[in-house]
Image (cartoon, rainbow, N blue to C red; front, side, top):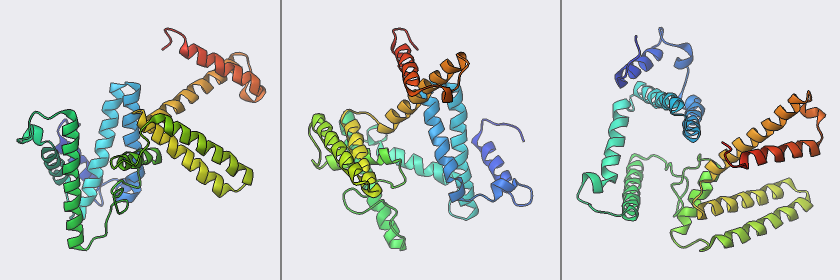
Length: 280
């Protein structure tokens, strides 16, 4: 079997890997649940390649993510549920339905009108799926009932917080000004301090959760994706801490040899270098 640019080649490889007796023992023992962590990991690696601007890596990571789709589809086919062509048909049907301004008669719409139309069609689709599941006697798969239902529970917590507040804002349950959210953050921070004084871990956790939720809401008000912002800050922290370690190694020292003040001074130096004109 040779590499191929045709999707049928990938499907054939996956089928071979999952063939009892001649396939790969590891692939054969996998289930939907067991490869779910890999599916999430590959999606994040796609995002990482995009954020680094590395198109070579992006090509590789998109392939890895596509493999996850093919893997899930193959297992579903083995169970007689659906196959990869059904996945393709489902997404093409959805895209055609959700773009009547491209494939239908709804022409000359503004971006806001397109978004509103997309949301209306998406609600119709969810209602149809809900009715189908009820008819088949299947339990609801939506995150909850009511207006906020339908926001998937497995989403990263910051992303879900942003989506919850955005949906609530659609019916006016929102601060009209970002400065009011900042005031709320100060209020939540004071409550964290009060909780810390009690020494009760469960209350401290609760108040820190409220604080993070408020920060996610502030990010939404400023049009910032909180997950992206935090990933960039994580990378920045790693980069600057690495600069501390490198500087100490050049002095023939280790992190354990340095005082907090020394490490702080090296941190500030790394920060200043990053902010200097012409810094990459």
